[in-house]
Length: 122
Image (tube, rainbow, N blue to C red; front, side):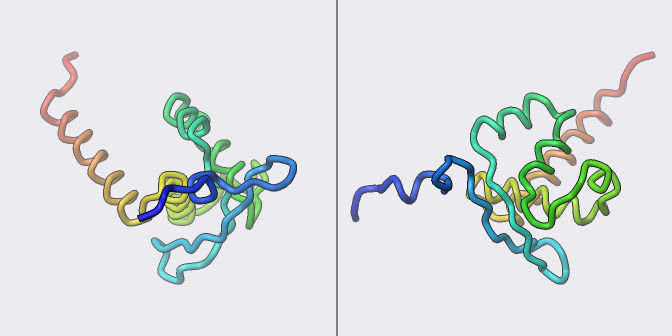
């Protein structure tokens, strides 16, 4: 077994330092179309967790093709949005899209159980 090389550990960038888009299959959609996404760096992933109100703008800026205006992105179909979001997280964290979806569903279910077991007092 050899040593881990930098070329396998760094997100690819062009000569000017911009992150390069990667062709990704949207595995969670029935027809499995391709899109080009720009991976999120650790800093962007952290921003996404720290500022959930900026999720749409952060995700939109990482969709290379097809590109959406801010207004178009506001009316994107929820199924498409979810598939792109899972694909982007998957790409950025080196996990499968199905694993991302499963962990999201699990978190939602656990959160709803907590809310049911400890109702708010009026």
